[in-house]
Image (cartoon, rainbow, N blue to C red):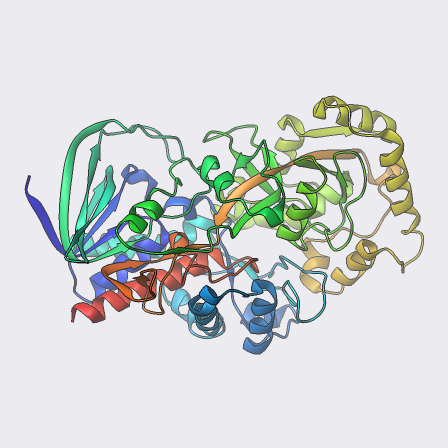
Length: 552
């Protein structure tokens, strides 16, 4: 078997792999870019994303009246990450470098490639703790014009231009099974050539072998993504602090996000750190029109929906919609049930429900200004109304007793208590009689509307859920939705994969989710949101530039 040679091999054609490949090619290096999926899956998981990016102190923020700074962002990051392990030394340094990037050249770098952003900056992961704790102190979530595909496009263009110049060779349906190690140095990869697949993007492709391959290079860059679709691996690494792993989970990522390269790189001598740190959403709903198996969509909630556990009890503060994803997950798993409920009004769903994913936001993804403008008009966005009509987790009624009966029918386990639900809804509604309140959630609604972006397009005017003028009533069953891997391959600030003794494993680098988005866990225990795509870009760029410099 002949061994194809290049200066560098990049394993994984997602966003981090494209960023690394683009940097290598622009430095004049010859690159083999491999992926186990068909060519139409170029861009990987990033294609399906909402396209949110964290920036710090941007023109978009300033136009919305937001005062941000690198110092405030770093305070938020460190309070959120809560680094507390010896192996967090490199992740902490990656975090400092990333915040500098987000507050510095990140926006100008992407803007120069043609990327643009929705003018209203969103406020994700609001925290609900003290100033030094978890969460974003200010809105930082910038939605890319074009969503996930709009983030991928500039890097795909750069890579395809390099293909035209003869510097990059694309090798799809090439699954890496081993890193080749010679004398302690990684010198290439070997694996299986998979049969062609005619499946659509996101659908599971076959794993039929039609041959084998081996390739050699001076450096291998692993950018293969996380473990989100491998529920067995998710449960295997599930931390005790988050309770018992859910019996039922939805997948927020396609099935090719399988985590294979983590074990393969570890076998070659690389170290995995923080495998117990992971990021799963608590507001997942079953996709009524699924693309992949167990396909779930995340609701991007505003702050007004009443959040109840499976029995009907209200979730305690600060476990409010959009405040603390993992804190809420920990609380839910302590209830003995792996699902919860939103109870809300039609007025709330129209203003506050967004859906994560490029395919769920055709206006932003298609850069259709007329459709975008409809977001500020009465009525819920079309994809939201489609879920309300077709989604298995949605129920609608004019009166609360009828709504509760429908909720019980959907759950089918008999644990929802009608009196408890009624008591929680009525108690919440009594707090809306005045423009002030002792209820933390109601206080947060009033506070949110002081931010221009929330008042315009994100937070409904305060009202009683049972007000007939705001109806009908809606309930949504929420599932645990797998998504991101926060731990991964241990790397230094040059993206070199480290061995267990802390020294670099010669010849191998890692970037993106497989490296915990840098360092083996740049986010620590929690994330600020808008930091996943940006982490792929920053770590991929870092890896590409470091390899190019090392090769000379």
